[in-house]
Length: 52
Image (cartoon, rainbow, N blue to C red; front, side):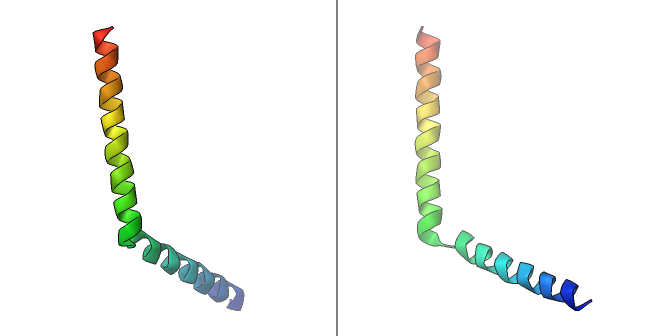
């Protein structure tokens, strides 16, 4: 029983650190910029393929 509680506590602690990382504004802005760049590149590739 004690092992289960210890394992659950460790999982909870590791989960909380991941939640904090997801709320990082710098990381969020980097992801947003990368996503926008990838979407623009995909749109450009589609346009080039339609021209051919």
